[in-house]
Image (cartoon, rainbow, N blue to C red; front, side, top):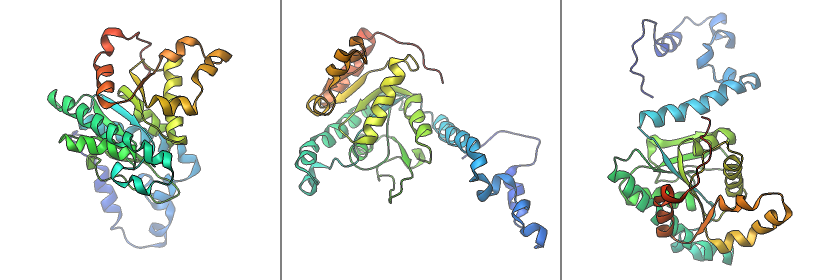
Amino acid sequence: MKDDRQSPFRDAHMDRKAAEGVPDTPQTRSPAYALAFADEEFLCRDELRPVRLQLELLKPEMLMNEAGIESTIVLFGGARIPDPVDKASARTETLADLSRFYDEARTFARLMTEKSMASGGRENVVVTGGGPGVMEAGNRGAVDAGGQSIGLNIVLPFEQAPNHYVTPDLSFNFHYFAIRKMHFLMRARAICVFPGGFGTLDELFEALTLIQTGRMERVPFLLFGRAFWESIINWDALSDAGTISADDLDLFKFVETAEEAIAEIEGWGDTAKRGSVPGR
């Protein structure tokens, strides 16, 4: 991370380097003597959780600001949805059928990135969770267009690494799901949700809740694959029961193709009812 600010104070990097060369004594070997900001064990203590939360908020925010990212197009979707080339290895017939959405996500990201690059590459940059499946397709589409994209990865109990298509300098790793979801939405100009599992549903409903309650500005909210979404969520039942209002069903729209999604986003300013401004 680059910091070009001028300061009359001694640089923290200099003191951290100097501290490595102090005489070896019982005092200097003690964990108490380590510089607090260079002491990994100290930073991982439970009492330091507020500091870690702040760091996870600040680091991606600062790096995206330095990269000139002004707005994003969010792609949520399942990690298990395969590239159609590999659909024969899918664990279920349904996953094999859903592989078409890998291609739609890739095409959508390519088209959106081409439009972003035509206007300078700072607006409407594709952001995904940085993993496999639909996330890989989104980052891959940006590469197809010759542009950059963001990946917001998270440490999981099983082995995981960012997909190979995320722009390296925009590939972030998180410990806290909550801060990761904040970064998904802080610059969002549109939210596109492809078929997925628990993680995708979590992201979908948190974003919808923020918009429904006026905590986030209303943006195009597109669900790819009406048949999938209507088969797993009885949206009308929620409205009929009164647990949501009928108007809440207008917060999102179903689309089937990349081109349809692009048209919805481009036509948004002419038809949308705007909500409140998000509190950043």
